Image (cartoon, rainbow, N blue to C red; front, side, top):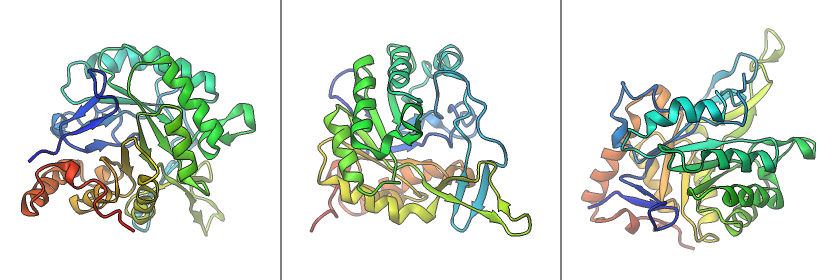
Length: 308
């Protein structure tokens, strides 16, 4: 019985994961924050928090607010910048067995390409996840991920500047995610993460103001699981590249649902705030389920429930 999965090209630059459970971007820091709390080497991979070309201070506080069955965040891509990441974080990652994928964000197509160029060939960096939920400053603040043409342009720019596996993280805040997914696949993406957070907000009735300092943010956690699961199910049949399911996964059962809907791997985010051990529990639970139900390989489960 094996939980291993292949993401990206089937060569020395591909991503061979020992398990399909990946730490999602933004909830696991740079991985170093959890290294003394859990055995990170048992994870399939770690996606770093998003990095930009230059350091960012992020949005004003408050940045987090709990909701029913979820969490709203408005961090605003606070990060150390790509050069500090290469200098301070990558040398630590190079000593780890678990692959580290760097999530990148930019304000222009050229900026995405430049970040990818700087990360290419850096020891300790095994892949790039492209966050296209960012506003395109050259197009009036429209998110790259809401337009197939812009999403494809970012993907092409990144692919042209790196030999690393390129995973594109889609936004769910669109009318037709399948058209975006197909455009990104056509532009050369090696895998897709489906999906990022859903836009939402909370209001303080006493103060009569939004709770978050930036007014709105991204909703994550169990509340969005049925929505994200549907997006994976919907896009699976249209794609040839692997899908990484993401959104509200908190148990082995949740992860198995995403795999059976068509995901080749899953990302766990908000659940790690409540229980840092949650990903290890999910890995163990998936292994038990496979053993009890006669699955010898994870591949045997991928998309098995996606029938119409």
